[in-house]
Image (cartoon, rainbow, N blue to C red; front, side, top):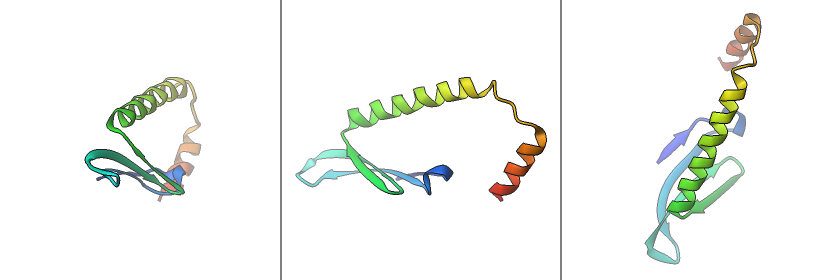
Length: 81
């Protein structure tokens, strides 16, 4: 089991694996996030991981051009505790 801290999602996202209820020989990847959960076949989980990685790469690429003033970063850091 892996827990991913996701502050804006409302809590951690839990990624795990389990056997399918209809066939104990079938392994599934489970994703449980606040408000929703799903089970995926391994190839679907890999495709989701690739899509998330690509979206994160694109968001970082675009985000590097955005600069905040230092005082804003200090205020945001204070909110994180």
